[in-house]
Every structure is written in structure tokens, then in C-alpha cells.
Length: 221
Image (tube, rainbow, N blue to C red; front, side, top):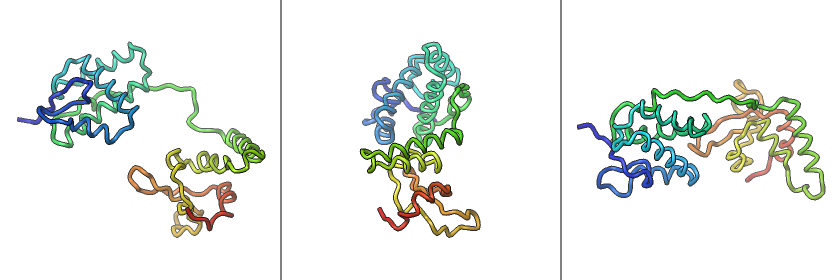
């Protein structure tokens, strides 16, 4: 008989194996996701079970997920929120299959993402970036802000494209002024260490970044 996950009440988490406590799903979620994300995922799961009345993972079909999606839209959820729920629910099935709790085709695989329309541009124009840079330079020049280098923050976020989490953990050792791989990239680089998996990605230093940080190239920490 193929393994199949018996489902617990939604309040206990995404699902549990019969006679197994604590729930492996609940442990996985609690050690992987932040509290706010956990709350959203439990809501998505509860909404899905309310729509389909499933008692085992194999009871949840693509049709049931489509019904859940339609119910969320009728309830006023934005398409982006429904897409986030679809992704969260899909992860539950992937986890169950990868860990031997269930076998089958992920019912979320055939559920298409909703189109998300937005008037916001995903980038700043050069004029907007320069205006922002000028504002930060004026900010840093005021006597009360002389120890707050907002210009450096803007350069790393806007010109280097660092994420906020990467900015929080940046080190001077990431700045490689003597780039050994100059046949591929003739400029100094910022070798960003991605915290999630400790892999790295190389970001060429824009001229403004080089001018800003070159005087501090011998610093550590």
C-alpha cells in the first residue's frame, strides 16, 4: 500500500502521521519559517480543508485546489495572496513526498498562478536613483547625521542590488579589489555570501561604489 498522510485538525498544523507526535510537518514548519509565515500557512491549510473536507492527503485533488482558489478570490484575497497560498500548499505535498509520508502527483502542479497586474515599475530610473543619492548625501551632511552613512546604504542597495538581509550581514572581506577573475569581469567585485545556503554571487562594483569605498579598502570586520 502506498503511504498516505492522515490529516490532523488544521489548528495542529499542516498534517500528522497516525499515532505520531509531535507532528513532523509541524516541526518542519516551526524550524523553517517565521511566526508570521507560519500563521499564514496555517490559514491557507485550514481554508483548503474547509473547502474539500479532506481527511488524507490523497483526498486533495487539483479540482479541490481550484475550488479553494476561487473561494479565496470571492473572499476578497488579492491574486498575489492566492499565489502565495498556492506555493505554500505545494510545499507541503513536496515535503510529504520527499520524506516518504505520501506518494502521488502534487495536485498543485496543475494549478496555474494568477496574473498579477501592477502599475509599479520593478526598478528606478537613473534620474530617480540620482535624486535619491543626492537626498542621502544631504542627509549625511547635516551635523546630527554625520555618523549615519545613508549614502553607503543607497549605493549598496540601488547600485549593487544587495538584498536587505545581505546588507545586514555585509563584511569588508566581501569587497575584492584585486579581482582574480579579470578575464570574465575586469572590475573589482563584491562577493556576496548568501546566508540561506552560504553560496556566493559576484556583483561588479559600479564606479560610484568604488569611489565611495576605495578609501576604506584596508578595513576589516
